[in-house]
Length: 396
Image 1 (cartoon, rainbow, N blue to C red):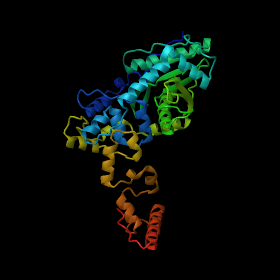
Image 2 (cartoon, one colour):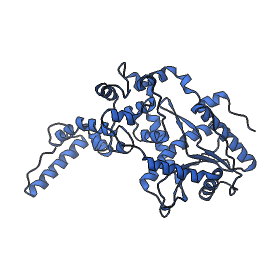
Image 3 (cartoon, one colour):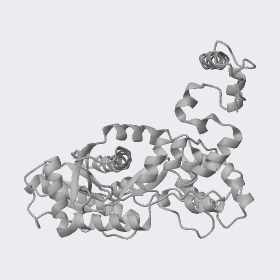
Image 4 (cartoon, rainbow, N blue to C red):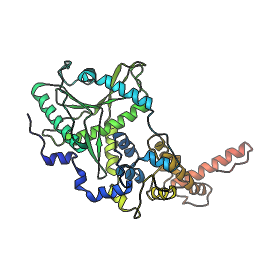
């Protein structure tokens, strides 16, 4: 049996970061409020955070473990964000069916779509026990199980099925503990992430938006697995094609597809590296800032507004505070509320009033390409309305 990872290796993989940064964790606990446990930062939240790395508000709230759904309710802007109880129960039932009998059906699908060794024999795959005390313990236990599985694959060509392993990923100086549905170690020693979703795969294809969301989430798991693999010598290959398992057509039978997540992985890695460190954001806040939902609404609103946000319409599908941030962006006339694409084209013009003033020739450098384009668009609009004999309505 291979030697277990050293204590230092376990810490690098993610064990006990709280002891390493007591000041930071104490500050984050103060931000949540007294005696409020932190909300886990999962892969779905990380994928959404990576999609909008400029939003310090989300980075801080997620890093501090604040429950954004309860916070949105307390602010009077509930989002209705999340999964219905029926969908949750249906998803759990489907996942249990796919993983039954030691993952026999899941391994069959992995072999069918991904290869990586001889066909698995039902009942012969290794299914290591990953139970341990706390997320740090489970992370270290998962790392050890992956090391042993890779060595066993090299020695005897065995398949290994890890159900709900625990992985750790450092995000802006704060550890996030992630729990993929499954990880499979192939007989050739390669590792594959398995995502099990409850949306249907009809005639071999599923909803593109949902598949994209699943790919972004799986990319976070692949990134975390690469961190674990990097501590092994030689480092095993973490496959960049994940296995997506969904119900087939309108039945409860599983169907699978291999999804290449290299693009999502590259974007996620780059965006997470761009995030400002959580302690830097926390240190810039006014003394006594707290996001405890039991505080008066005015005080809670002031605390939330003390952290800069970068709202975009895409936030509506990914963040519980989206409605609150959208209202504030509209009140301020921020052009980000109209979309990131438009915001990028407007250069230094950040508000609707500035855009209208530049378009009408009241401000702005005429040599600025954005200002020139706005004035040309305003002239074309005026000519079109004049040609139809219509009076130009107010721009707002």
